[in-house]
Image (cartoon, rainbow, N blue to C red; front, top):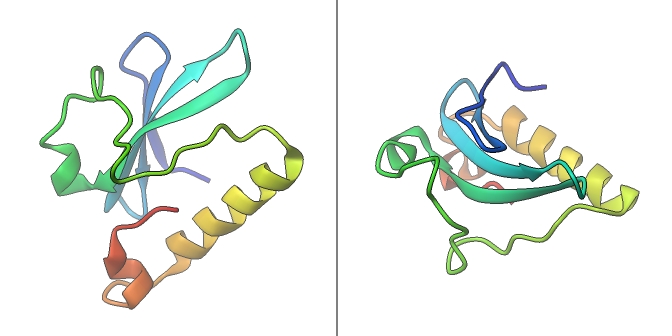
Length: 98
C-alpha cells in the first residue's frame, strides 16, 4: 500500500503517502501490538518537525489505537479514499488524513 517507509529507530516509522505529498509518523509498540500516530501532515509540514521526538498533536488529531477489525477496515478505507483523491480537489487539498 505504501511506496516508501523509513524506520529511523526505537519503533518509529515514517510513511510517504500520496506520491510523497503527505507524511505519517507512527510509533509501534510491538509488545502490545499497538500503533500510535505521532504526526500526519504535508511533506512541507514534516520538514519542520523532528520525526524521532514529535509527540501526538492533540489539537490537530484525534488519535485512537486501531484494535477491533472494524476500526482497522474503516481506517484502511479512509486511507484508500484519500490516496485516490485528485490533486486540487477538496479532499486532495485538505491535508487531513482522518
